[in-house]
Image 1 (spheres, rainbow, N blue to C red):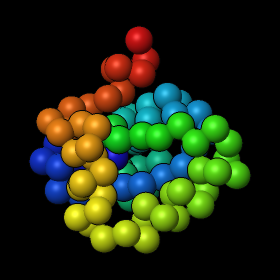
Image 2 (image 1 turned 135 degrees about the horizontal axis):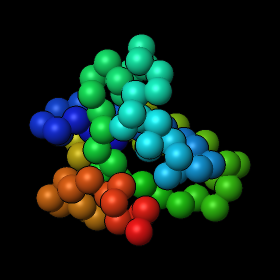
Image 3 (image 1 turned 90 degrees about the horizontal axis):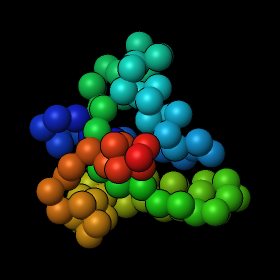
Image 4 (image 1 turned 60 degrees about the vertical axis):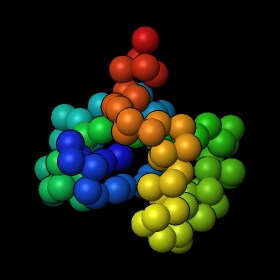
Length: 89
């Protein structure tokens, strides 16, 4: 997730991507990191198949530097478009 200026990045894990992104977009938790920094754009996601696989992958991505995260987004979404609409049909 990022903001409209693509200046702040958030990495998270969920079993229900569509619902979780909707929660971020509607700021269900107003004091959360994503709400405070207005992170409403889904610019990258991976389907890891299970939470057992997703959690280590999340830690790997979070452990990388910012440039690694930017490169990851650029690898599938070079225009940094909001992918939410593409996954909701």
